Image 1 (cartoon, rainbow, N blue to C red):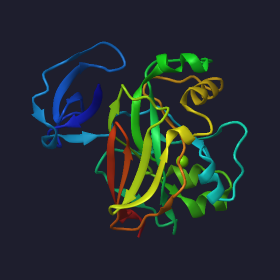
Image 2: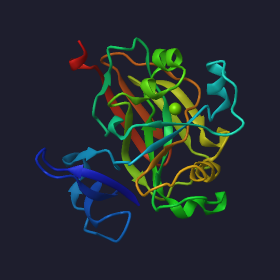
Image 3: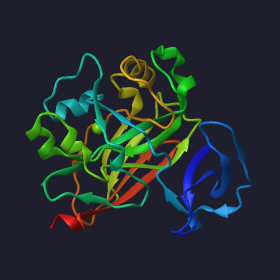
Length: 258
Ligand code: MG
């Protein structure tokens, strides 16, 4: 099932929905608990899609593809390398990524994102699927110059709009071997399979849940393949996950930062 959040007009509250082909139906209740699906009668193009989840926390994995670690002359980690992005960074499909005035080098990072479905701590890899609601596409937008200058990554990864998520949550995806691609203005920049992850999804969930409690709606960004590159004003960046869909966002300068 494909789960989404939408509005039909700017004044409407966000509504849970589900997608059948190119039609949207209301999902009464919550996908994290009891719900009932109403008939999918509304054309997808008539609704305004929102970020499909509002996470309490976003746990990210760095250097989880060897070819990406190589392009930064960085070591492949022996255990997963974790960092956090703030929930205030989340935007939905079509919302602009804002280039902050503090950075001259903002880059895209196409990633598969895991959406946690149930509260958990200390899970074994083989139990991980029981705690996953589904998957969505993510862009781990990064101010690379600030990331490298600071040494730790909070500023470079944490600006508002630096975590596009969407277009929906796919509950049926098998994350073991799906293609991730990133294109900018229609030009391919990144393409790899999740089978190239150093730590696959079940191992990541086991590792992260040995540190912190995972809550329903929390999101895990599983790392980006090689090919990260610059975003400039006027670009349109798309992250596509095979079997899931495409998350597209325009890029603008931050109008408050001038
Ligand atoms: Mg990343």
